[in-house]
Image (tube, helix red, strand yellow):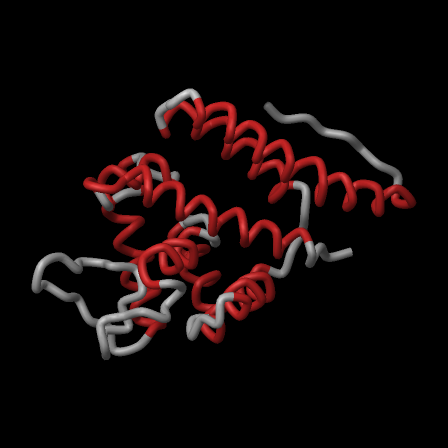
Length: 195
């Protein structure tokens, strides 16, 4: 569900307070209700993403700054590549939170990698097979294009739709983790609203 209010400029502090308190509570409350009833990921996807997208759409943020702050919070070596994340997301029509969130789920935000691989996304890693990139920027570009070509072009454009293909044996765990990190990025974005 979505709702819209138009606040006069003098009430922006109220809007910021509302978004920082009420909306996160609503997301947690709705999540706990649906997940406690063993509802499938696909059934909860629309409700959860509507609540999250309300928060994102209600703000105007510097996405590069948001990703830098988010990744620094996790001591990620990817923080200095925030601009590349945003450029690749825009090039391929991907939610700018998705690639950083996957890296946090797959490699603790780029901290735990196969040495020398620069592969923070688990992209093409199975058994003894390892796809290596020459640097993180190449990895961001390759995985972004791969998500677009292999998933988004085919309608798999949300974490819930991507999860069963990206990580079939652990799709619910992967979905929950990626969604958690995307929500964390939203929290940082709420702290950095452009006036």
